Amino acid sequence: MASHPFTVGFDLDMTLIDSRPGIKAAYQALSAATGAYIDADLAITRLGPPLEEELRVWFPEERVREVADMYRELYPTHAIAPTLAMPGAREALAAVRRLGGRSVVVTAKFEPNAKLHLTHLGLEADAVIGSLWAEAKAEALREHGASVYVGDHVGDVRGAHTAGALSVAVATGPCDTAELGAAGADVLLDDLTAFPAWLERHVGKA
Image (cartoon, rainbow, N blue to C red; front, side, top):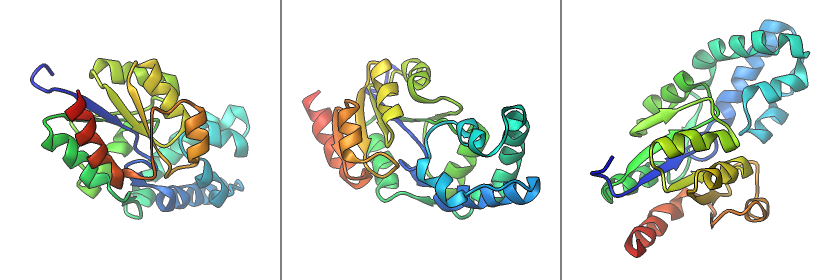
């Protein structure tokens, strides 16, 4: 890591990828497999927290682990193909690379499925770390020496600050600019298309 001047962490869902169509399809498949009602349209409006939090809305606690495993097995078949890169995602990762930095993806998503998304979309990161949410994301951010963390949720802001990293928030997920600002985001961007220019200024100042 010493040969790199900086490392930037990125969240995945609704930061780098628009996984709503894929996650909706996965929830619909889970509903069909279990016979349980799941409002998939509602579920995809609150992406960010761990899967288990959403499943607790639709299943009793004693079934959550079993159903989570089932969802993760169904996920590659139903969720990867419909998912698209967010506007500016490729350019954001390319900007980090162009300026000599490293990109690490730190997400609450099951790590093998997160890697499938990146591979399918041709999004290249130096490391991918899954199953971490909010403050727990700081573990990976610290380990990889990330000085910036980019995310779309107030949980991402908390993760960045717990790690001592700058919180760059994009208003492309369930939290709007006002919520992200109130949570203490250091930088607010409408979406990732504004990130390369911001990063150039940030690196130049550093």
